[in-house]
Structures are given as C-alpha cells and as structure tokens.
Amino acid sequence: MEVRIGVQNTSREVVIDVNESADQVTKAVNAALAKGEVLSLKDDRGRTVVVPAASIAYIDIAASETRKVGFGA
Image 1: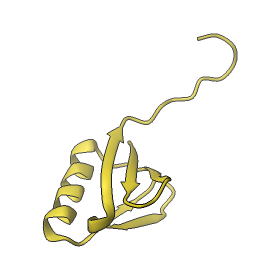
Image 2 (image 1 turned 90 degrees about the horizontal axis):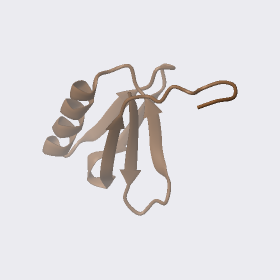
Image 3 (image 1 turned 135 degrees about the vertical axis):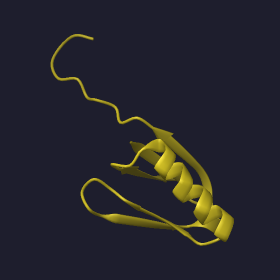
C-alpha cells in the first residue's frame, strides 16, 4: 500500500510504501490521533517513519501503482 501523509505547515508530503493492509494502516492512524501520540509506520525496506499526530493534515491510503515498462498503454 502507498501511504501519503500531509504534514501541517509543510509543502511536501511524506510518501511511504508499507506491506500492511489499508485496514491496518487506518487502525494505526486512528489510534495515534485518538491518543494524541505519534504515528509510526514501517516501510517495505525496513525504515520507520514517525509523524506527530498533532501535525498530520491528511492521510491518503491507496494501492501501490504498478509501473509499466515499454511502449503501449
């Protein structure tokens, strides 16, 4: 899954590819927002991204896009 996190007062968004399902990511986001803690997600390369819940502007959860190779549509 591709997760895009908009951070308040920042022009760039954080983009992370995770191996978790959309439901798991949604539960993690809801828990972080409810408790006012940090959102911690681990990407498919093993890196961890931590964002303070108070700074989250929006979250976009989408299926990872497969990239086409070659000519044609």
